[in-house]
Image 1 (cartoon, chains in turn cyan, blue):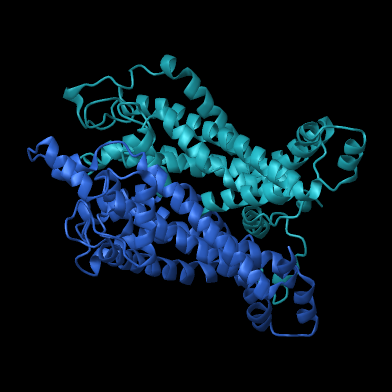
Image 2: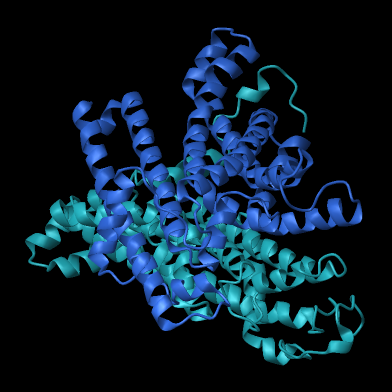
Length: 321
Length: 308
């Protein structure tokens, strides 16, 4: 516990978990300057990754929590005794009781039920938007990095342009244009956050396209399309997985912020952000309405971040000793 | 070096052009009729509405509207607000921006003052209570939505205890809650980064050399470790400063703080299109400039960057 000897603080050469690498690497990933690492696919490598991941107790805990959320989201209509939109004006703002474990909201809806239905929105937006972003980002980044030249120049400026926007301001504007709804939130977030993936993939591809096996494939007469999809993208995907797992949490926060401001998921759909926004107007008398969704968001984001940390340590070859 | 600067500047101008186009078109397609919103409940004839649209150039073709906007911008004229008649957008933005900057400067200062020493201490005393506490705190700090902390802080300090005003910007007391809430996330991120970087640098050869030379521990820590550990922190800081608005829109709405985020949100809600356009373009310009500055700093420090 205590390390008071004057030189003992400097004696650990290889700390087992270095957050520095996390953050500097994340910055490097964003800046597109991260060095490339190859990624060998196959069962043994996957197994090794899993073993490394499993060593992170916090990450495993996070993964367990996410699995629980997925189960809740899938079984919501069977496990909740009420419906999320069932109004009961006589129970307006009631605190927790045996029948309503987390109490009722400002118009008497059961908070626990809405919270459970809210996992659907959070997961749908977090995973859906990330999937859209990864798809666009990988496609754009691979194209830019592989073809280079004018294509690269134009796509890179597009990436720069998107990354120059203050994200929430852009999302609020787009949400006003397309109208707030669950579907639009997923699409709008997905279509605005892909630039960082494109940057990472581009940097990876720039180095991958000069590798011997790519040259060999080209010499063998493989088409660009085949080389990109078979040889380049699978090898550039590692950093994307890390980045994506770390981004899901912030997307969930973004969605909740949008909904909180009334430009995310439209009412009466139960989203944690709209629940917070509903509760905020009554926070003086019924603070419990706002407490539950806030904790739900925090725990979910925490779980995704922990999994992301674990994945990064498991996937990043520079951390292997 | 000069060639690199010119290259980055021209790229920056191109990006700003694309940003202005994109902003213009997003707002061009914004649903609703600003002229109708402008008159509100007043009963007007279609001719009067048409006159308003003509006056504000809403009937002009897009290229003319875009051209006028950019033309005026280049002469430094941001135009006047549609929804707050007679108010120049330039004044509105500079007033609001100063309020936002005040909040953020304080929040940045407080978070750095706490996060930097705690991060270094946690790194030098690994597995101590302080280390666990700060690691736990920074992990949780980035996960909790800060606007929720804001709402909860209002409940506790304004409603229950009655110590601090829940909203507005009337006295020095009004600053406490929003600054506190804004600094949490910043503090968490900086602390985590500082701890990690310090740990990494402690393992470097030059630190061992300094140690072997028999330098005092504090001298090593300050001269060799902390100085180098500051570099990624500065990068993160530059990035965060560039994106100040994204962080403050929600907080300013929660605390009804008369800053840029609030102004932007009001403008979006009231279809004050010129104001929205102006704010977005201003902020992206800040980001583009910050990026160029960062790149140039790297180029000065690391010559390899220039040839990329």
